[in-house]
Length: 415
Image (cartoon, rainbow, N blue to C red):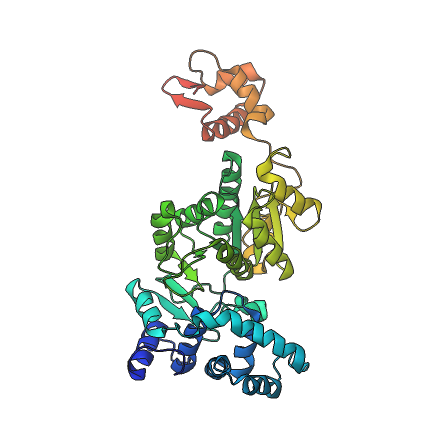
């Protein structure tokens, strides 16, 4: 196959079949061409996506290689004949193709599929291709900007199955309140049977993955570099745990280092994979806002959890809400209720009356006020507080859950 130098063609195709796993439906020649393309182009290259969709991966690659050697007219004529979008204006489309080939040219001679496949095999990577087994069909909504291939490190057959998917993203330097909000939203989604997707970064991303792992629900981290580049270094063990319980996904070839541009490009995959996206505490220039932007363009539900209005770490979330691009999370179940009925069926509606915190619940306050220096039985607490014994028992249970009171041999006392 042209453009995929790596020794004997039979050995190359055998290696491609190995990383495809049991997916016998995928043509290994076309798949090898896709892998070569993934080395040549940067994520989300629409020109490459349109060429592959219209000409097929192998023909598109061969035609581009010939065009780079001077046979440009043949490529342009082939695009016009195949009806590649935009080729109806041959002059304008020719300029687009020239520009694309110029940016691809430095990598055209280095698309070594064999080395890429070997690097993936070294870390237990698996290759997913559009239309093949395990491919997340939600990514097809990206059209020509969809990934050409995906590399996965996972112990499951399907990276994202039929369950609803919630993306939880946000600040890398979150507050304690932000972490608590992200944890509660993630926990509620996990209880409803959702898969949690995020970016594996510090801060809110890490909170979402950790809560999902603790809850035993699948979680997916989309990487900005190759599947063998676990980043950031401080989250390597977390990412390995994600791979064991869910999946690590990357569209860039193994060996590709994460860069700022690739982080931004990665965000479109997070948005497309999810049925809804929640942004927790994002600053004015946070990458999480980029994820929200992609989600909105795809018609997905977007929610925001801002912190204090004066906090620079939450300016982005406040703007999302003020501009009508995101809904404010009022209840942890709001994002789940906005997704598919499968998820909503497992959650209750937002209560008409907001639940007061334990410290502000009037009966809990009265019970705690009634406690003295020594432990008291429930009947004495009832007498002092003016509540019934049943009301005292309920209030003490709530207070105990929050660590406000303790029960000993002599009765109840402050903790």
